[in-house]
Length: 91
Image 1 (cartoon, one colour):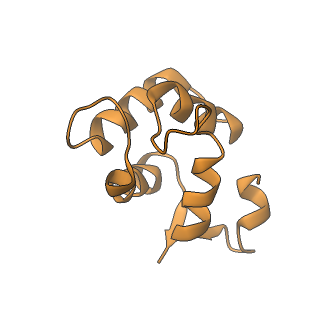
Image 2 (cartoon, rainbow, N blue to C red):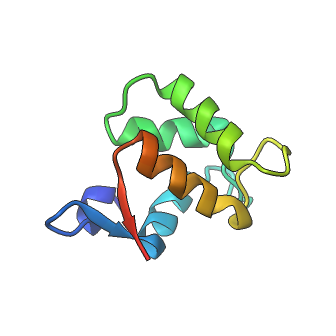
Image 3 (cartoon, one colour):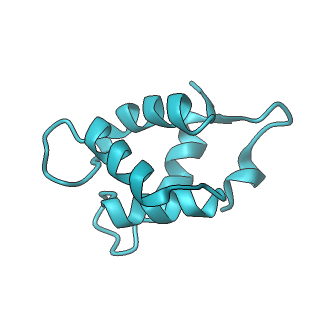
């Protein structure tokens, strides 16, 4: 689902809708988001500097340093998306 479809009129998206949208980019369906998958998600929003942003987002969200964003680390990615991508994500 394109993120634009799930956003409200004021540009906000719920946390659950963000998670659902992000899972669309889990190409190998392993339940984790890799740097390449994150880059595709950022690119789908028309983002610039996708390689840089995906690397930075992964570094900030991946607290266990395994190279993937797991379900338990999604909150960290939400913080990154709000600060660095201008997304408004609500509870």
